[in-house]
Length: 395
Image 1 (cartoon, helix red, strand yellow):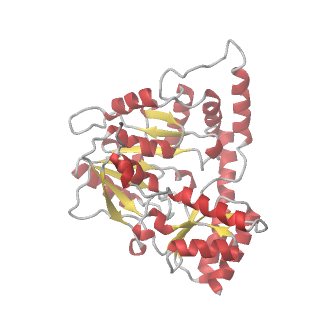
Image 2 (cartoon, rainbow, N blue to C red; image 1 turned 45 degrees about the vertical axis):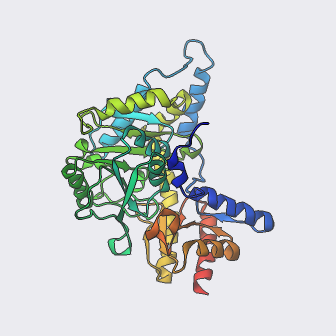
Image 3 (spheres, helix red, strand yellow; image 1 turned 180 degrees about the vertical axis):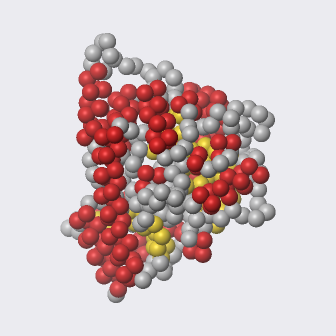
């Protein structure tokens, strides 16, 4: 009889957001008359930008004409028109990325989880705590040893380079999910220097880079000197352009990046993707291309601005209450101190005020006693949710 991959036996029983979904279903079934405001999962609520919808419609029409019909995309990396648009976008904020270093994917979550396939199981993987659960789960599934870099209230929830600890692979995210903290150039340079000193590779999740408004903060790890020798960057249009329902992301692997035996990382990742990834549809890639046009940037920036106004409303609530929090600036997340076990606060907020958030302990031990709310909702719901949160925390 076939044997199970033992890594799966070392996982928590339920994935964080599946557990949240289960609790919501149970509450809704027991309380069908109670309307819930969902601020837990970071799903967007505004529609796709009209310029993207138009591009997708045009692409769909092309698929119905023999002369313009597209079948399998033959490069395995995404169409050149989209990779060129992404490379141009990077240049707009000072990061030099080559078209041939860009791989189009179905989202940052997939590539964050799949990138571990190309690394040996005996690599030591460092993840910040708290962190997006996919970084941990995907490496446990592949039987890798995971260690943690502490990020807590004392560090502003940005992970600090540890002394005397060696790792081979390092997962970083900025602006951070869940805490909303964003690296300064100096902080990120310290991690690049650490990776260089330890012959390590950084997996850098830049899914929320478009929410950075502070021009002094880096939008990409490739804005940092030396990063091209030690980093892979993963990004997404899910939050930037509302592609949560259409799915598209991209990963950048510098040409000079190597494994310890001299093997080229880009070539190995291309081989993995060629065998195990079936690509993103032509229609969606045309829609994504439209994001990077001047009109696409204008329209998507309007949506980002809307969500950041929600974040400002949320920030003002916690400032007024005098409750410690991070995020809300340069990030669509608010990470606040709930002063009780975070799953208990989840249950209390749901049962008493019908608001859903995300318990901090689901992101790691340093998340206990903290709670995440997202700004991805309507203005009306955001204002109402903050009213309810304020009532609960003032009682």
